[in-house]
Image (cartoon, rainbow, N blue to C red; front, top):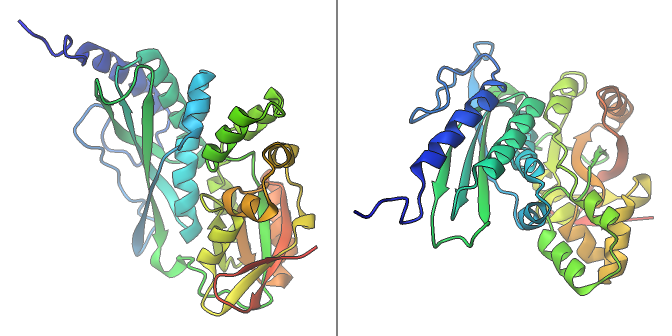
Length: 333
């Protein structure tokens, strides 16, 4: 008799993984989950404090950073990255993270490695104050090479309709306040991996800094958004500084950044030197030390920075908004 296990799919391993991760999911409980891990779907109530709730959703992955993390056995960071990349996108609209779902696909299920990934996902959910509502583990023999796996994440948040932040209130003269990144987050790793392979000038300490878990800004944004009038926000994700900041700007406005106003981690400068990467390429691929940008009236920038520092962020005025060609980002100094 031919069995599913002989075909490469171990149902028992999948059941063991569900048994192990159920307590991890429960550790993310925020009080709104209605169901437990293991059902066909996760049910989550919308907080009754919202009068006219709007759901905000986003999806992302970890990209080729996953390969470097897997080589080092750093599966927990992959889980945190997965949550961060999704959650940092939805909070741009002013949303409060509500729930998270994950998709884990592999050729042969390694229960220990998968448990560590989900442990990182649970940690990321706790950092973002959202619940891990469920997920899917797909064992696909022959589709993925031995030891390989991929991740996808899905975040859902909620915002009061009257409090949606979409950048439409941004005006010329507004200040741009940057929040420091923890490293390269989960973007640009195809280029990083190429530099690692073609250059022997990157020490392990630099690679480790680039691989640091993506910073999750959700709690910080929730803490400060009622203290100042935030007019727009941008998550510095794929596309770096030059592609993401324009996504929050109204028609006819551009951003002018002053790189001297923030500290780019040494790892970025060493990566740039080792790979002989031009400034323009660095700025359109990497966050260059700044993972999130907030637009406020210039008079409110000091209050915003003080509030962000209070909650543990390293914040700074990184530039301003001007009238000009829509979608342009200029650099001075």
